[in-house]
Length: 514
Image 1: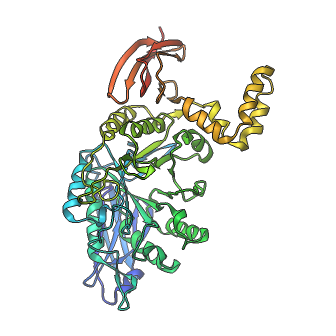
Image 2: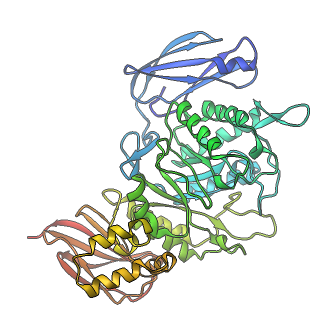
Image 3: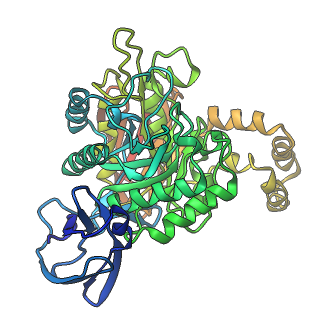
């Protein structure tokens, strides 16, 4: 075994394939035991997968239709192998403590494309700034995605129905090879377990069939060190499932994933209840990127905007962001302590290959600028904490009485101005906030970051701690330039700006004021 690398036991099985489901293996490291279940991998073979967590000795014992015991030496993790990603505060880190900042992209139907296209996509990902990819297990039927998959997750019965008790091994072996390739490149695989875009009947399986499918997924894939679970893409567009069905599926994953992989749920219109204990982070679909700070405060969990529309030229309104707007949304989210996900939707009338659906090559202007942002964010000492924006808090009607009580001490004229805003239609307030707010965050007193989005300011004034000495940079997020505007700044500091949109200001503490 090697620490943080998938370990696999291959066991000969005397009996039917169904007997594999009765096989259990208990792995013990440092006095802690993890029990995992087996799965059939064809030709009378049962496999069990485990993820070792620490150098030393790991003993194992297989029970059920197969009986076996053994002991393995766990070698230290290979260089640049840091273990699965877990939540750390309001951000993420690998199991060994190495910080992980998700800069994701979306390629929904990657696993259902021809080998040549999969290879091209993986080659592109290796050269991209993206360290997380959202992809579906089930095939997807939607615009610009009409081709039939090479394989399906299950075989069929004689009457043409999906037999969830007979996984298609060609599909799973191929899917697992993609996961291994992504892991080798240091890319997390955010696996979408269900979705509504279906012409084959996978979205219409019974609840019992769904649980059988999830068992296959968990037994085969949970031990991969780079796997996250997304219960669904746009769960609220699946009419065949009730909320009780969804909660049952969530509970099943929580109870049957021995490795406790990251887990969330993506929505279209109705946000999931991200306060539920099984949910590790928020997976949001929104154009309103000003809500990151609000959600952080409400859920006390990392906020990942997994869909904020896509850079491209689709006729559909969600698929024609400019590259500049995509970059701006990334900066808005990052500056307020969240994490954003990219997508690209450029029409290709000849072969219907669109990155967001199938992969291929990237055509947009945003990836290079996202790489520039990633370099800046990863160099920070921690996850940015949003600097509260009083206007943003006025959006939530539930907070209005609280705000009225808090402003009671203000002079009448000032109090009246705020009360007028409180009584304004929430949509009007939202528009005001979106247009006029700053996107600001800080790491204690070590770093202050402000993003001005489309504001074209000639100057700004920073209110830095008097005790610190700061280097202040002006960042052009589109031209990808960093210009030092002040050395050894402290306290109230006015900085000249270029009077153009897309400007950020970064102040980094370099010492104490002499």
